[in-house]
Amino acid sequence: MAALLSTGALAAPPPGYSGNPVFPGWYADPEAAIFGDQYWIYPTTSLAYSEQVGFDAFSSPDLVHWTKHADVLDMKAIPWAKKALWAPALVEKGGKYYFFFAANDIQNDKELGGIGVAVADKPEGPFKDLLGKPLVGAFHNGAQPIDQFVFRDDDGTYYMIYGGWKHANIVKLKPDFTGVEPMADGTVFKEITPSPEYVEGPLMFKRNGHYYFMWSEGGWGGPNYSVAYAIGDSPMGPFKNMGTILKQDPKVATGAGHHSVFHVASDDSWYIVYHRHPLGDTKANDRVTSIDVMSFDKDGKILPVKITNE
Ligand code: FUB
Image (cartoon, rainbow, N blue to C red; front, side):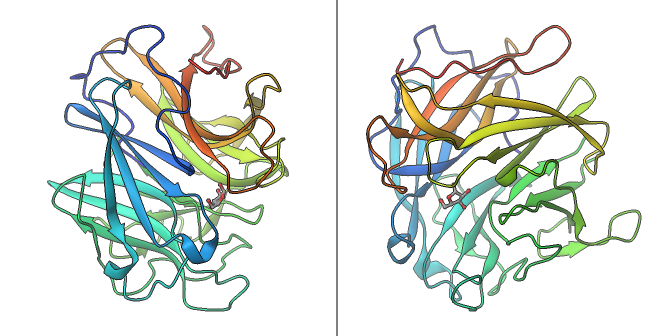
């Protein structure tokens, strides 16, 4: 998602700002966005593929009190989708809200599927499919078309970074989000897998002129799922691997990963929003959404995140 950077209107939440998980229910792959004076989280409804047929969203003025918006994008509004709606990415552009999602299982079921985009007039929807077909509907460079993240660079170019199955690609989006177009070097699907450990869940932001590329690694659904990052001077890399910054704490929760980030511009505070498994619960889809503080050292390195129940 590209909307993680606030315009400065929001104040940072007070210390001890929340309680983890931040809202009840099995919700994974949380997308963090700031629209106007509200924080938003758009998660995957974490159920079996056949039951992942819609998305709820949550809004908050303060990262403490959350309002649920049920069914903001329903599978009925996506003619080509049959199941497995995954991993939202949200962008506001020109007064419209764009909801990128993945649908169906092209890997196992060999059916039409992949990354789609829906549009609405409000952050709470209702969102409707924009294209009538996937935006990216096939494997390229070995990357499964899931887990898309939309990054807006300073020049106004929108890139989509995506990929499961241990490969990550970057594509340049057309300005109206109806497709992809070649990048400066003529490439359409450029592989930027940052590490042999990369699994899925990419995210990018820019800070002090550097591009931070984050991702999830470790076993899917397992206790060692974690988040690592790299830094580069361009969205296309090359990237220097900086290591793991979010992982399980056997006293708090396991399988912490597939995250996104809130940046509160008014005081330059950062929060990581991620899913994790409750202690003692080993079911892969039993995932809850949590928020913790993310901070940087003086050289711009991300410090290891302390996961909490606060
Ligand atoms: O929620 C479905 C899948 O689980 C996502 O696509 C992956 O990133 C993993 O979190």
